[in-house]
Image (tube, rainbow, N blue to C red):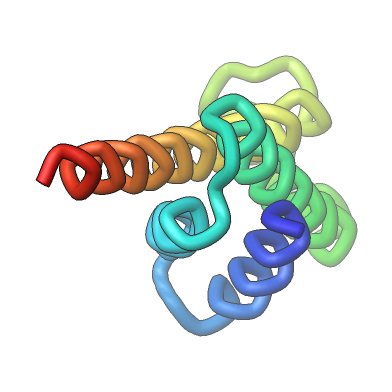
Length: 116
């Protein structure tokens, strides 16, 4: 459930908002729906990895590989396909860590309320 929420919301909002929306949405959704730290991280990582991978793949084919070839050359990456995977991994890590932070905030708040 968390995976699909993050994927759909971020895919839509990235069309009109800055790239860092991929950290705000998983953070907020992890506070709301996070069940377990590892599951929350993997859901956010997988959703944004897939989202950014598909966006990068779409751009690669839309520009007939011109853009990805030039960026891969600039970053000294051997293949545009590797660049597309790296793009997904970077986005996935950012979102996964944001979701994990949201989950830990949720558990910290819950523990503090229990102590009161």
